[in-house]
Length: 376
Image (cartoon, rainbow, N blue to C red; front, side, top):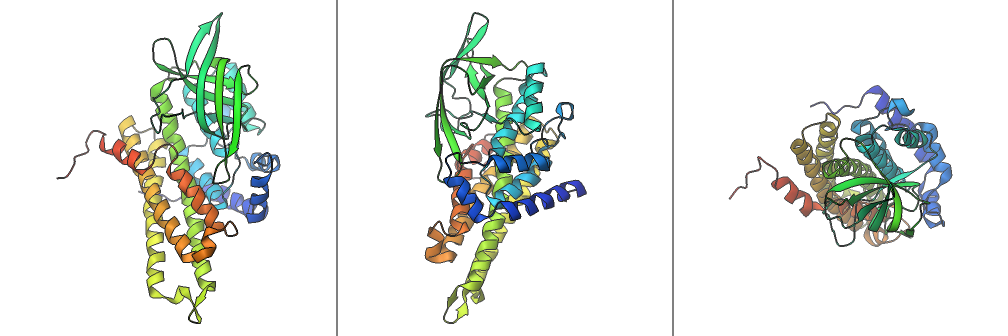
């Protein structure tokens, strides 16, 4: 299978890399993380100017109808630069509206605003104590006076406090899962914003009789929630690839400058072998991630999509741990400090590894799919 990017995708990747290299360096990123907001409105405007916010939005709503492969190109570059802006959360929200929305005026208005860069979204996947079970939903919705009201709590909502609207899975009176839109300024919402160890932002959202709007699409239930999560997982894998590439490059560069016994440690054959292994882990993870993006973009059947996504996420998790640990060891004591990029890259990879399912979760999901035969 040919995984070569087309000219437009490569041009977009090059343009984004030039922007990030110039405007989103190590010191600039640290300043954003340490700010009260934790994100940068100036860089969000820069993303919009580059067309990133419009990329996943359908053409009918002012976007470019970018598919999972297009988004993979972008996420790799953002991962390489360790961008902390709420891009992943927003584009996953766009996919949720695309899949579960009914195409009405309200949904279209939201998508148009996202394309213009004036509105951010987030999907509230997680609930306390649910671990990685998407369907362990305790948030409930009631229908009162022609209006839906939500009660419940969502935890670790990535960039939840920075979003203008949330897509929230909740239980209806039949016990089934449905998807709802909630505005940030709606009544009965309590937001607890905090910084995670990788410099990103997350929030706990507590809803108490909070007004919500039901997504009216034909596909707006549990199966679609799983599909949205798979899309989000593919993009996380792509981001991880960018971080792995950056970590490999930083490690090679550092070993050329650090000396032992009067020579750079990059000259030691044993360490060269370790760095080759780091590259091999990354390339294996890349192949599976590209395959998952292709499967998703091609609208493969559900089991084929699940198989490709879980294989990619499991391999990304393994690569993140191996490459990260080796990079820290090869950096020596410096690798444990916040003064070098390697430490920040490893932290981000560690969070990605445990977001939307860790290695064990996705291996179990893969093994549970039809056609898998255990070998004695």
